[in-house]
Length: 481
Ligand SMILES: Cc1ncc(COP(=O)(O)O)c(C=O)c1O
Image 1 (cartoon, helix red, strand yellow):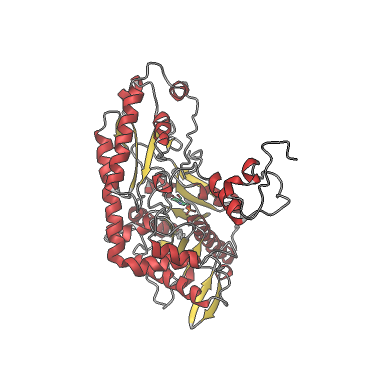
Image 2 (cartoon, rainbow, N blue to C red):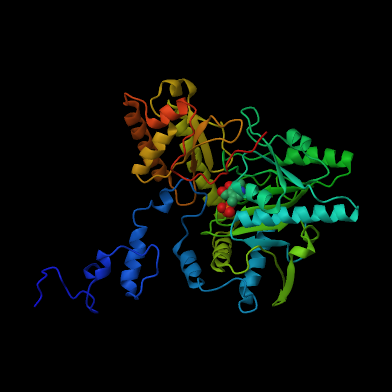
């Protein structure tokens, strides 16, 4: 006889998901469960664990694609079982990858005349940056060895607003990172200051198109001019690697006349994220070299597939192939004009938010104009003195409506300045911008009613560092002399 009124026979084939025993048990944390469960229950447990997260398209902190159309999604899902590295089994995907490299190289005005341009794919810009950096290091090393000179103390030069990948590059390969602080007067990499930090051991200078911290562009053309003078007088061959994680897919479509790419003499490699403004879901990065002479042979494995010379370069071995189909689909589907329409709309929405934020009494935009669809703002200094709240409080209020808008302090030399950033991407319309602006205005109206300072206000007034609750995608910002 069943004495327990709650005891049920709840694992028959007809038991519904929420009638099952698993729905009364904690999900596994330390040990793999002893028994299997049904696919429906496993799906529900995993799905529901991530249920309370924000909607990716309301995540204005990330740079990474959060919208693709249904055909792109279908193509990528259908390719989910394919490992890119199996090039002999899936040779057409290797050729498709080479076609993407060609298309991107041409968007960046490659001078390479070979049918197949020199480049590589990565899991993201991080891998692409690493490959560009390692190639610069190896080229430098080879030159030094040929000249019988020591190769023990390589360095590279970058602004203090670098993304964390460059800190990793520095630490993993033990290459000294020399940073030029961004300041109020020089909000981007100062070309003259960058040259002053160069010497015979400099493997490259790394300007950034679409600086993670500010959304601005370093002046690559001016840097190239300064480098030309410097290399001429010293006899060095210091090149430029452009980290165009965000800008690489904005510049060719919106500012085709602006010279930042292979039109400049010393630009020898460029990296970008296919999964940012390349409009593909994560993870996809690209690196392109000026031509095959700039990719050290030791890094590349050249194989002939279906008549195409495919160059295999990478830190990872296995990697998903679906992103390549996604990238090639976007090129075919959108064409140059289609990309231009999307980037231009994205830019217009960003400009609109920038303009509206600029009109709000508590805020000042960091830059008058924006050059990528992302920007930062800070609190008007007089308003800030009297305010009982900080941008960290605004960040938390916006989270309550689902928006992820990060607040953080700028890197070294500007580390006291708390800013807030919005990254506009495909999938963010003018209507959504209005909703965001309304939520910001409502949040500010509530914060203005505060009678006592918030904990973040007390902390910042006492120079105690506050850690924002939204990931900023930047770096530590600690370096910068
Ligand atoms: C300038 C810059 N470089 C590199 C990266 C790293 O890119 P990924 O996330 O594609 O590895 C980012 C990411 O935000 C970035 O903004």
